[in-house]
Length: 160
Image (cartoon, rainbow, N blue to C red; front, side, top):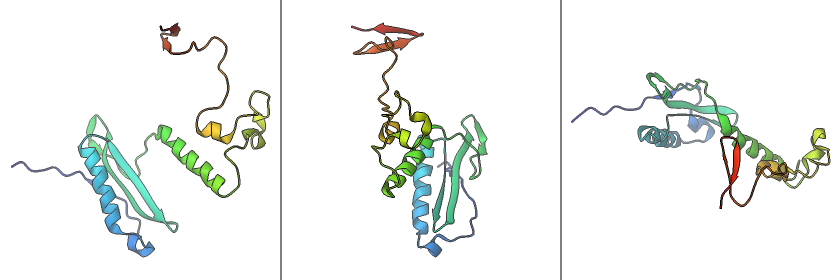
């Protein structure tokens, strides 16, 4: 039987035990196992996470490879990677926290908050529109031919 290669999990020492803030170490182990499984099944290239409770970091772990074409470099807890569209999730959560706190409303026009939106074209755009990418702005005339536009090589062709 061949020797099984185990995925290395990198743990940055935070100096805080999870139990000291009422968090279970077993939960962190479960997260590590789940992410490791996804990497081993080639569903993810790498993963990293930080868990904080009561303003204390209790876990800062990573696993997998930094680059898909370089098996020598591991993804470290402090490795820098592009996070791309995941920022949309953080923005949405932050906005919804402001809604929960009563500081803004989802149906509130953005123009009430951002001066540059106080134009006839933009004044009806709400926070909800921005979160759902449905600004209500109409495209320039002639840009889209409904019902099923096809865009390729800079040409718009009507199908059907």
